Amino acid sequence: MNTSSRIGWIDTLKGIGILTVVAGHIFPDSIARYLFLFHMPLFFFIGGFLFKPSADWKEYLTKKSFHLLVPYVAFLCLIYVPYEIKEILTGKETIAKGLVRPVLGGRFLIGWTAVFWYVTCFFLVQQLMNFLMNKVSKKIIGLLMFASLVISYAINNFIPHFPGLPWNADVVFAALPIFYMGYLYKGMQGDPGKYKWVFFVLLAGVIVFTYYYPANRYDMKTGNYGIPFVTLFSSLVVVLCLIEIVKIIAVNPVVSKPFSELGTASMVIMYLHQPVQFIALEQFSIVSPLARFFIALAVSMGGYYLLNSFTIGRALFMGSLPDFKKVFGREKLATV
Image (cartoon, rainbow, N blue to C red; front, side, top):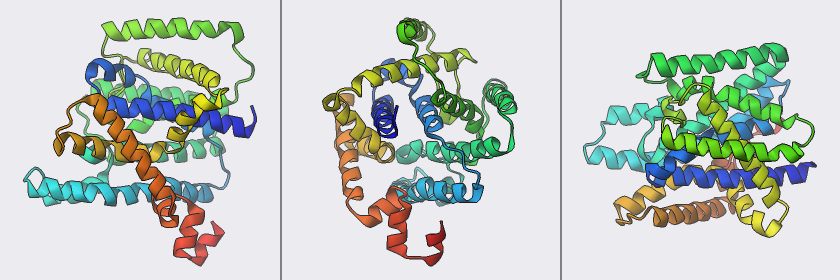
């Protein structure tokens, strides 16, 4: 698989993934519980697949900070500030809490910015994995991934009311092993060929099992990782099946193009879809989940195209370092 086809395949997968994220936040639990089984693990898996270790940790930290944290702060200013002003004016929030929430991030962010937890958690996962790849042997990394998973289950089961760490740092324990599995998947050789059908038989079993056991779901933001090991296995089955489906879709550009476009815009959609669907519900009384789903997608995609058309939009809201240099022209950025 060459670089261009690999990126196209990943963008298509991200496009399907972001559709499940938006749907999971809008549709009723009878549908959402199946989406919550895999939609956030999918993005950590994709992140691991795309991960490239860097020996220069300072450069890696700087680049990922621009790519992830600059848009995070920009969207916080765009979305969080008006939301908090509304909450404070209606007496639902205090000024003190309004000031503390964006600093703590993670699960302390609610409402329009509830989904922002993913960005800081993903950033921490990337940095920690890059450190491990450069400092620790592969054998030890495997043991650390298992230990990390066990710690996540311990927190989930023995400290169920754990308030969480800033930036959802505690969720790193659950996300890191999934990220690493994505990285390992990239290095796998060969094609499962005639055994692909096993994935889909397992998928049918996962769907039935989840129907009878609703606890088989991930709610990673709140630190709820479902049934230890079983939910992780279930999630990976869904992810692998989606990959096989995407490989088929990617062969046909006409079919894959819309998903690929959504995948390219996935981060902007992630930031914008919640405020859009909440405004549609609360201000325009649009109750239909299907209507809000399409409105959220349409407005978010419009926001992506708008921001992408301006240099400052790409610099601040998409984390483009070249555009950031153009806008701010700081000489020391030229060395990054």
